Every structure is written in C-alpha cells, then in structure tokens.
Image (tube, rainbow, N blue to C red; front, side, top):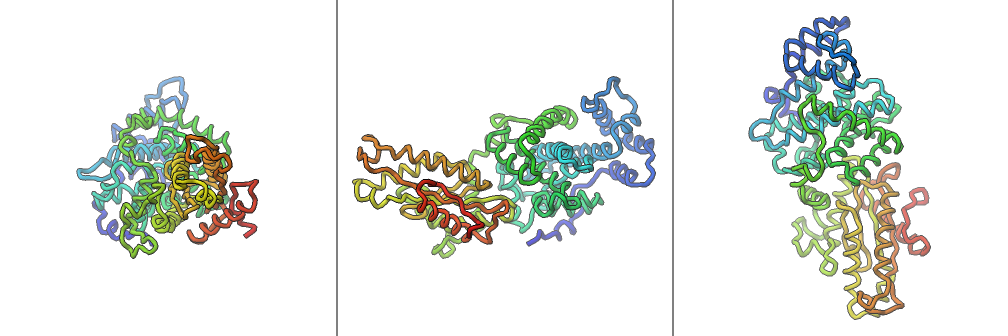
Length: 500
C-alpha cells in the first residue's frame, strides 16, 4: 500500500521550498550554455552563500597554495555541479528550520543528511560511479520526505521521541501509521521541486536498493545513495561494534565491497567530516556517551521491536485479538517470552523484515535429553531456567528469545546473514555446554553422568534464500534442527535450501 499523497498535494504552501536564489542557480545550470559570471552574480546576491562558497573552495579538500578571494574563480575551481549542490545543501540547511510544535528532531535529521551526502560521494568514488556530485545531492535529500511529513502533520514523529535515532525504527513507524514511508514523500517533493529524474529515483528507492541490479542503468547510483544512510548511522552511533557489523553486512550486500574498501570508506569519511562540520556549523560526530539522543534511547532494540509489533495490533494465536497480559507474555519458569507471544510476534517480525529489505533468522535450540534430566533431578526446571539466563546473556541486543516448547527455545535474530546467525548459535551452544559441566554447586546437583545435550537448527531469509512467509522460515529451522539431531557431530546445522 502506497502513501496517500493527497495531503501533500493539497497543502503545498506548508511544504519546504527551495530558496529563490538557488532555484535561479539551478535553472541557469540546466541551460545549454552556462555563463559562469551570471552564476557568480547570483551566488554573490546571497552573502551567506557567497561566504560558504569561498570557504569551501579554500578548504583543504582542494589543496590550494594561495587563498581564493574571487567568487567567480572559486566557482570555476569547484565546478558547476559542486556549486549547485553546495548552494542547495547550504541554503536548505539554513532555510528549513524547526517549526514550533514539531515532533521531528531537526539537529539529528541534518546530521544524518549531511553525513549521508558525504558518504554517497565517497561510495560513488569507490564503486566507480560517474555522477559524483549528483550523488552528494541525492544522499543529502534522501530523507527530505520526513520534513514534508512533519510540515503536513507537525506531531507525527512526537511519539517516537528518542527512538528517532534508530532510522529503521522511524521507517517502520511510518509504514505502520501511513502505509508508506518518507522515501515516497521525498520522491514526490523532489518532483515538485523539479529536481533531476535520477535524484528522484534514488530518493524513492533509498530503502529498496535491491530493486535495481548494480549493472542496471542507474542501479549503482541508487545503491550508493541507499548505502550512504547506513554509513551515516555508523558514524552517528559512535562506530560501535554492532554498527560496524551492520555496515559490513550492507556494504557487502548492496555494493559487494570487501573489507579493504570498507576501511578505505571509513578513513575517507573521517578526513572529510571536519570540513563538513566547519562548513555547515554542525557537529556531525559524537560518541555514544556524548549523544543526548543515545542516552535517552535507553530501551534495547529488542524492546523497540516488541513495541513496534504491538503497535501493529498483531493477534497472538488463540488470543482472540486481545492484548496479552504480562503473565501471558512470559514463560513462568524461564522468564523468557512465551510461546503465545512468539506465535504473535513471528509473522509481524518476518513481515517487517520483508518490507524493509532486511535479513531475518530463526534458530531453534532443543534440549534432547530433557526427559532424562527430569527423571534424575529433584528440580529439573532449575537447569532450564539457568540455561535460559545463559542464552539471554549470549544473544545480541535486539534478538528475541522465547521458550517455544518444554524442550525448545526459539530465537529470532534480526539483520543477520546465515553465517552470522550460526556464529551466534555456536556461541550459545558453547555457553550452555560450559554450564552443563557437572558441579556440586550447580543445578546438576553433583550428578556426574548427566549433562545438557543440545541441538540447534537455524534458517535465514534473505541473500538468495527466500521464504514466502514466517511459517516457511520456521519450518526450515525445524528441518535443520531435525538434521542436527541425526548428526550429533554437528550440533549447529543450517537449513540447506538446495536439498529441500
């Protein structure tokens, strides 16, 4: 379902607009024969823009030995495309300010937009894309639809509060409430402004890079823009290990970059950021401890995912559509999520992954000797409870653990490749194996001939292994678990799609 554009069409006066001087510069630039003096005169008519143009031309990025004081010479040095992009980015940043009562966090919006613009340019260089200056503009404007949405409905983003720092959460929120996202609104606004078709195309598909193959016309361009937002998020999150993992996954998936190219990309971003900060007078790099938004976003990614799914009004199996009580959401013995909660969570988690073009993995962990444990131990639930605590401590923030059957745990791993999912599963297996070593102090009560025997089956949707729905993915994990039980030498088994 596409976003309803009628509020935008009917309320164009409330939408952001390109400053008049920039509109005239763009119009002149689109003409066949360019008079650089006319461009220079237009830039000079806006003193702030003229100062920024000279500042940019004299930056270390261009390595001039002598300071440039002449505006026309500065424009010749920068080139027409760079001048137009600078005019657009600086003028938009200056003119589009936060209105009273807005629910959108404007400083965060501009931080991400400017970082994405810089990243799009560097990604294009590394990937061999020719339209580098166009990439800067498309990277800058890829989220401009959020401004449009905020102007039409000024309290739209208010309930997200600090969760706005998680850009994927913002998009899911838009899809839930509007049936579409800011990429669609941004593409409409780009057309309304009369920007190039290629820019509009990149904005429209900034969250759907898979629509175009790298070799397609404009495919590389669109993919660079889509990936630029991931690079921006990596910087915003303080370059944490989790953000690095996500960056590597997406760089490999979208542009097929190897580790060396990713490292080069990060190094180039660090080189450019100081000049971008000086030019736009905005701090772009803050550590997670310094960022107020990150401090406020104290809920785990898992909790946000749960809240997101609750807002989509899912119906738990046998729940009759009513919300589950706290007691119903959790397993009494292990305090992990319950089967009823998981059955309601699974379809929506899969649907969100498909809509947002992300991987998702299901892992089933089974205690294959649970009956024997029950026979030998006075308090068999104690070992299962401790095992659940160990599993909870080894999964990543954002993953969801539930007790799916007496002898099984289901873990939903968002945004993982099959190799990453297997690494998480192996880590869980090793942790539980250590727990099951006999100890007089532990739940095993000193019984030396009983340990916890585990098998794990895992399946991943994405990267060439696609499933039609959550049920198929869960069945694939069950099939992998069955194989694991038949091959004890390999306790962690992935689903073999080709053998199915």
